[in-house]
Length: 193
Image 1 (tube, rainbow, N blue to C red):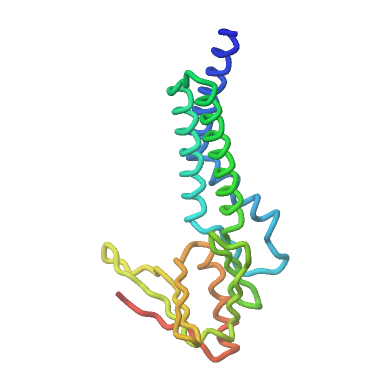
Image 2 (cartoon, helix red, strand yellow; image 1 turned 180 degrees about the horizontal axis):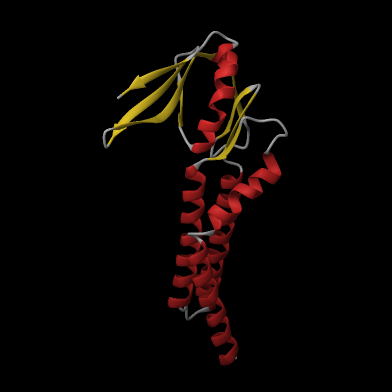
């Protein structure tokens, strides 16, 4: 019995170490390929995981490692205490799985129809068509004496805006975005800050 408890603790310590170390690497290695398999359309200008999804998944994995560490440190003396502890660990695993699902489901796509976004706490994709955009701006910031593109800001008919950080992937898709916007008489204006 004592050997089983020691082996169980060793296994949990190994899982804690793996969870903690992989929390910094696994989101960047696994999240995008999984999303690509599940959600990427055949024709698209941009398919990208939001940075927030990587960070949230990283925090969820670290949180699970912390819960398991507390599980090892705190040893309940009663059967009721052990059941409560198991319930807490089980619930934590379910929460991590929920956050994993929500992170996988958090992405953005740009194609000929418009901007498709799936917010973190949403299970439904929102579409903003190119026709809804009445104004487009590219903000440029000056850093160390060099002006660099920073964001694309789309203003919609209702006055709301959609801000996109100008990532390398978005920069590559910019000619296609220009093409779609020009079909509706909208050009991307440069704004300097």
